Image (cartoon, rainbow, N blue to C red):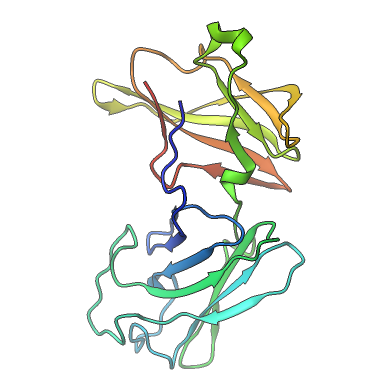
Length: 239
């Protein structure tokens, strides 16, 4: 029922000028991470030149809530540009940095600052909360339906981080080629656990309508934050 995109591919996060954050690839401990950032998210000085080291934008990264902060100045692979390609998907002119995620990383916390030519510092930090990313393929996995329940083979069963709460699906139904408004349906904690201690959550097949394609994302609450698994921006699909 769930087909994941980007498995086995190094992760990249795009911070676009339209204030979206998009993950491509598989974000997981022990792997490489690329960060692409559009400086137009910041209140740039009138004399700002794309990629100039004179007005640096720095990315700050932590791999656990109380872990050390890793700071790197973003740079332009294309050099300093007077004419930039502003692409809302993040595939245009972007600043760049890379990191290696430690094997013992618990999560990814990211924020940015920009120092303009007059010395003033501006922040891009999700209004002080910082941008937070979980290792989704570790937190959420499809759980197979027991053979004794083959009549429910189309149910959605998830094995979710045991500390997570309020697991739900956010879905749109494609009707006559037009997606409906977003609806949300909660999953039920069954009380069971898988071999790794993840709790099993259930969404009966009857909840998601049949007869038309349904696109959905998975959401869960953990450590005071809500995380959404949107399958690398493509959503999951159910026919």
